[in-house]
Amino acid sequence: MRPRHAWTAGGLGAAALLAVLVTRTFSSSGWPFNNLWPWLALGMWLVLTLTGMGLAGWAWRSWRRAVAALGAALLLATLGAWSMQTTLPRLGVVRDHEAWFEAHRADFVTAASRGSGVDAATGSRLPDDLRYLSIDGRVSRTDGNALFFAQWTAIPDDAGGFWFSPERPPSDFDMYGMLCTNPVDLGDGWWSCGM
Image (cartoon, rainbow, N blue to C red; front, side, top):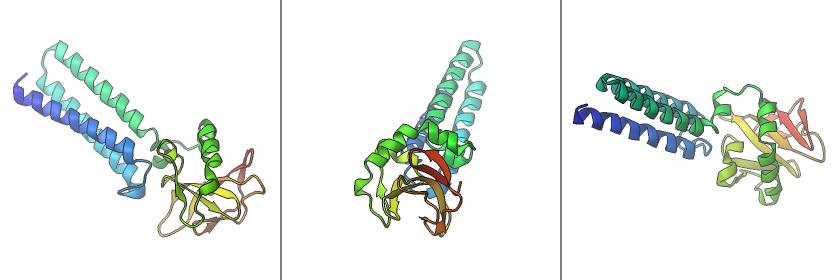
């Protein structure tokens, strides 16, 4: 393999790794592109990984080098899947929101237990390890002691997500402009609405 091919493959691999790390960092924070970020990140990761694999296959003609290139591509794919883990619900890949909630119930309970200092108007930022629980990395307190974890937001308003409302069902609770109707009981004071 010529040095320029090695530099090209290495540069693309480094760019793909950087894309993976940036995706993992920003996918749950909503910045800088809000709901568009997961799609941009997925596209960026796919383009970089596939381009790197194509160049590696073209540049490395021996079978040993091809195996090494496939190993590197597998590593990038694994890292990409890890980085997209928090983004999958935003992409619509996970269609069963109740199953997703059940899989992360312990983290929702942890976030709710920290909810005493939640700001009612704009919501409070969740800790870094729990930001993936809502689309914007925040939890809001509305209608008394109910906590709202938005899973999607529309422009300019409206949302849907999970409620922690142990006192009563969140019927007619405000979800950033849209009222909760027909909430689905998830047990132990948890509800799904607008999903």
